[in-house]
Image (cartoon, rainbow, N blue to C red; front, side, top):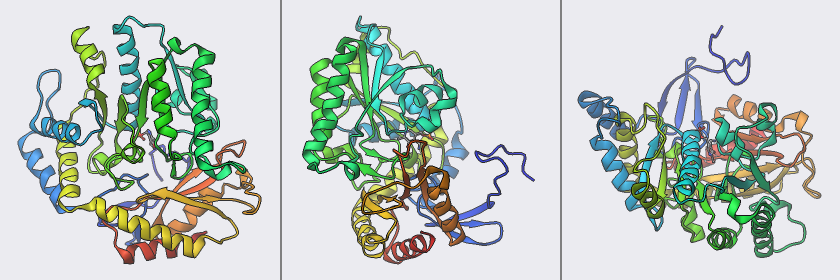
Length: 435
Ligand code: PMP
């Protein structure tokens, strides 16, 4: 009997008792490969000795000091590192404790930025229909996934969602990728013109869609065009890299591969690799200067922002990734994983598409691969694959299953950056068995 309210009432979940490398172990001694059980969190795998040592050192010295009174060495060092590796124009970092908090903070930054610039009429947010930006009320409003939003209406912030999903190359009918990308970007411009461009503060998007569609990269040229449109109408571009960022796609930030720099970027999950809860907003010099020359502060805060333990863990995680050149492994193992999945499941009757970047790979499940018909959402195919995979010792992330079938059923495979060829084979074997 559990007294925890789990997401699924009466869920009987295995008790996780240990983690080592790519594996998690439960109380019965069963082992599971963590191929995204943590929603693309565990980038270094579990129990990494260097991160554990860094956590011990920090706990010995200082666990907590409120950021209203003090800064801390790990927070300063982590911010320096993040700014050094950030896209062009980013000058500062705002720490939070996770992805939803990062999205909330980015929305409030955008709002405050325009208020301080004397453009307080810019209140609208535009985002993509097929998106997920978090579960707090503001972040939930920003995301377009109806299944998660419906019962919480009216939402606190109204967001205007655009179709088609920029990245949804699989369901474009008889149209080239580039043309599709331009059409998807045009939907943004049309929406800005419909709302009145000077009523819009920001456009928010994930460069590679994660939780709603199992790793769909934006089509080539899409984000460049979006950047141009945002610049033309003075709208801020917020890129949500909570799931696809921090090396997951083979470069530190996913948007590097699109040649685009945002005004605000949200990161979390892989930043701390699961060793501590941490997220951050990266913000541009322009936004920072507006606050600095205006009210002199960002009107926001949480008790645990910049937590020294969280920053020490994230710093250690990021140092190991660089020292061990793990992004190179993300690229080679990602390519291998993709090849193996194509070989093994590419022709499967119910696998419609296999896509992604680096170690962020999604499979789209369909009832009929010739006409791409999605499964009836009531069948909950994604949840059944998750369960069957767990029975085979594999944790993969299930996505989708919305009411109108637009989102469909997806499986996200996003193992730690340390995987080797043997791990990749095991993952593909167990997933094929589960499917
Ligand atoms: N943004 C994106 C793109 C995400 O994938 C997620 C989590 N799946 C979030 C925001 C919310 O992050 P968290 O669950 O840490 O609040």
